[in-house]
Image (cartoon, rainbow, N blue to C red):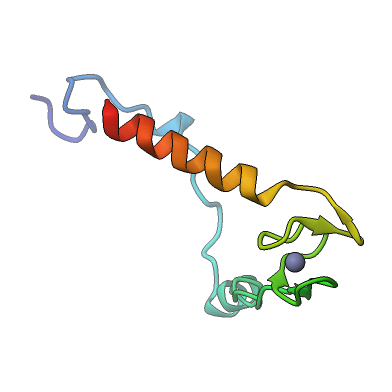
Length: 92
Ligand SMILES: [Zn+2]
């Protein structure tokens, strides 16, 4: 083992000249300024026109399956399908 030359566990020499390294120190202020956009925002929700349940905007209601006043999803069919899939998984 040669000293002064960085090695990987596999024995390969690490070429530090090709590694991407930050050219300047990131100051505390610049770190904080970048992090100012990291905060989570509350999820916006809309009320269903038919049943009044909370929903994500631009999506069909999960409870009754309506979107913009017309039926978009057959909720009962979906429930049956998920039950069937669960039964299939239990059988296997
Ligand atoms: Zn609804």
